[in-house]
Amino acid sequence: MTKIAFTIAVVFALSYIPLFLLKVAKHWFNENDLSEVEFESLKIAERFYIINHVANPFIYAVFDNRFRRSVRTLVSFRRRGSHDEKYKIDHSTEQTASTIVL
Image (cartoon, rainbow, N blue to C red; front, side, top):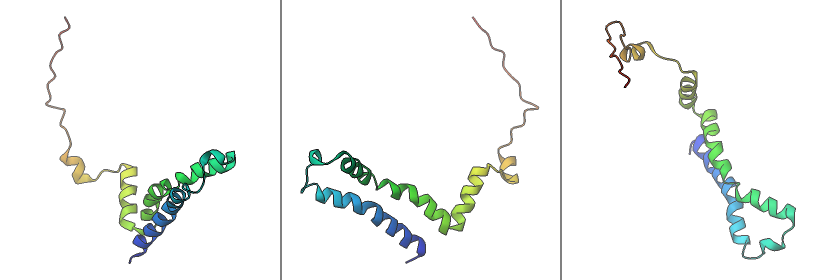
């Protein structure tokens, strides 16, 4: 198993275990009997799975050079020479139509 796959699996497990445990534990306690701090802690733990979705791009950025290069290119908005020529518009011979307003 590669490092990236192992890391993603571990982060997935760690981020979903609290949610799973809370679903099982809800059969033993009533949310109305919890103190305010316990209730807020419960709500935070219920949303812990979001860490998995946020962590994935960072995991790829740490372990995958190709991903880093692609993100860097995407963020820097660099254009490549052949790509520019392919989509270049020649405005020198372009005619414009007049607009009539009624």
